[in-house]
Length: 401
Image (cartoon, rainbow, N blue to C red):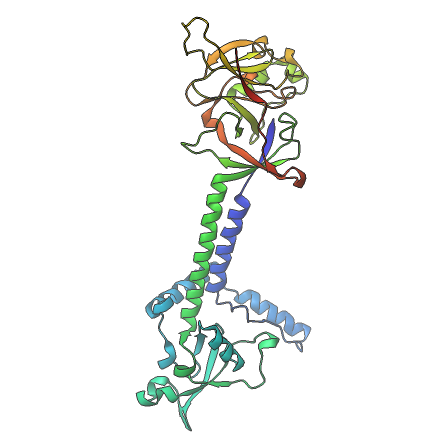
C-alpha cells in the first residue's frame, strides 16, 4: 500500500518567512502597530503617482536594511538591552524621539489617560522648569531635573481612537515614567526580541518536523484498520525505541519490492506499478529480528519455540499467526510467496504485512524489510473526523500446539 507523505515543512517555511520579514521590517525602521500610513486625501492623481513613485524609488534594499540594522544594533548595544538599557530621561534633548516604557498596568493606564502610551515614539517639543526653557536635560541643574516638564507628541500618526486634540501633552520625564529609551535602542531591542521569538518558533517547528509527519492512505491494503482517504500521524522511529510486533509502520520501498514486481510479468500486465519516487508504504509488523517466520496458506506464521527444547520429546510448540487472507492474484508471484518454511530474521529486519492480504503485496512476496527503510510508527488517525482515534491492533494472536 503506497501512501503520500506530508512532512511538516510548511510550518518551518512559515517560521523562516516570519523571522526574515520581522528582521527586514524593523531594519527598515517601520513603526509599530499604532502607526497608520495614509496618502493625503486631497492629493491629485499626479501627486499620488509622484508619491507612489518616490516610495518605490526610495525603498531601502535588503543590503541597506542590513547596514541599518548593524548601525542600530551597534548603537543600541552601547546603551544596553532589557533591564540594563540606558534611561535617556536625563540626557534627552528637544527634537529627540524617545519611547516611554512602563511595566505596571495601573501606571500604564494612568499614563494612557494623559496621552502617554508606552511603546509609542514621542518627539520632545520643549523642556522647561517653570518659565525657563532648556534645549537639553544636560543643561538643567541636577537639583532641578526632577521638576523638568517636557511637552511631547507622537512622532507619527496614531489610530483614530488614540489621537488627541491637545498635542503636545505635558509629562515630567523623571517622575512620571520609569524608563525612557532612545528610538534606536527601542527598535533594535524590539527587532532582537522578534528575531529570538521567531527563531524559537522555527526551532520548535524543526523539531516537530523531525519527529512527526503525516501520511495519506490511498489504497485498501490495510483495511479495515486504515481506509482509503485516512490521514495518519506518524512518529519517527529513533534508537532504542524500535517498532514492536503489532505496530503499523511507515517505510520507504526496499529494492527487493521493486525487483519482485518488475520480475512478475503477470503483475505488470494486470496493472501493478513499480513504487514511484517519494512513495511510501504502511504495513503491520508481524515479526522482528531473531524470530523465525514463514508463510502457510498465505498466512504469515512465526515459530516462537524453534530454538527452545528442540530435543525434548513431546514439547509443545508455540506460534504467532496473523490472519490476513490470500492475495487476489496469487499466480502473479512465485508459489514460495504463499507457502514456505520459517526462516530466521537477521539483525534489524522486520516481516510486515497488510491487514487486507487480498490487496497487499508485502513481506510474503518480497521478503524481510531492512530497518534502515523504516521511517516511523503510525499511532493515530487524525482524518476524517469519524475515524479519528488510535490505530487498532490487527488480527495477530498466539497459539500453542
